[in-house]
Amino acid sequence: MKIEQVALQLYTLRDFCKTAADYAATLKKVRAIGYPAIQISGVGPIPAAELRSIAEAEGLVICATHEPATTILEDPAAIVERLEALGTKYTAYPFPAGIDFSDPAQLDTLITKLDAAGAVLHKAGKVLCYHNHAHEFFRVGNKTLLERIYAETKPENLQGEPDTFWVQAGGGNPVEWVTRLTGRLPLLHLKDYAVDHTGNKFFAEIGYGNLDFKAIIAAAEAAGTEWYIVEQDSTPGDPFDSIKKSFDYIKANLVK
Image (cartoon, rainbow, N blue to C red; front, side, top):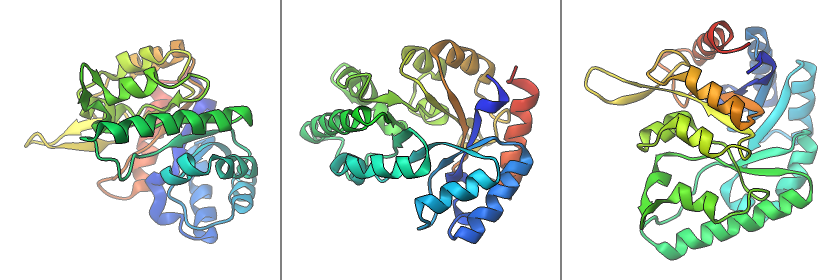
């Protein structure tokens, strides 16, 4: 992994990206820390062209986005248009909101719609990825839902954006899942997994939890990952301090 491949998921700083002015100030801080790229998610209602111009002014690449789940499934052409405006080719389905995981028909429909939406993006030269949480490790017969999602969609229609924390939280093995998605893994969410003195899990800065990121990164490099995206859903204090701790650890320990 090279430092040029490290990005920040802006969902981590969502409370500081509600207006264009706040977004611009936030990106200035992100770039000063050293991040070369960002993933757009959790920002306020700022026009795509303005999001792009502000990022470019700071020398930041928009490597990918997250888009509303319903829009991805029901109006993928709108997603293509937005990605064009942002100057990026990757987006990810962020969360299967409203899905009843006890209803096999709803799960079948989700998978079918993901494949169909991904086909629209693929035809336009864009790429739909899937971002997992823990609940995709719910077993449906002898397979987890995440296994079904990848087995029952075409690779050209659906690529991976696994989240290392949520793979671990779901009982999966992050290294194994990265390896499993070889050739289908343009994006990887780096998120450390830690527990407190009572055993409750929490999001930690990269290198400050329990995941073996050296093994994860080695597997991701072999799998062909293009972007390594730092995300921390919640932080113990100032999120800018947390993203700096993660970046500094990555730069000192994980990049070549």
